[in-house]
Length: 93
Image (tube, rainbow, N blue to C red; front, side, top):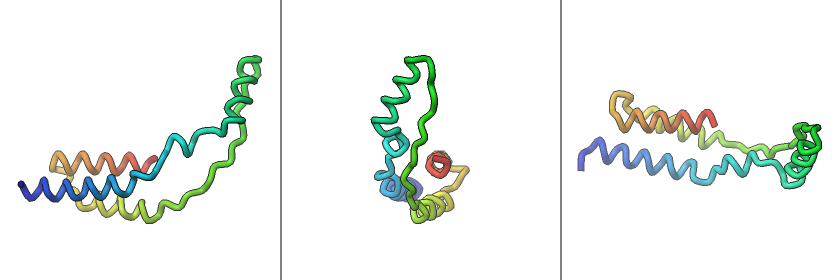
């Protein structure tokens, strides 16, 4: 197998391992009660955004890992560019 492909396959596996437990939608979802209250108010013609307190997470180790993966990709290589774009999408999220 091509050395570049081996390199990028390993980086991709590291990337998946870093982010596989991050559940963006369920983390940002409103609690059931807040959803029901919002929808009831909306149906009544008086919509408002509920005040939701989100749990804080420390992703500093994962962010550092993402930065390492980004730095090991060559932007001129199509797979390297793809992985860098994927890393950026996780850094922004």
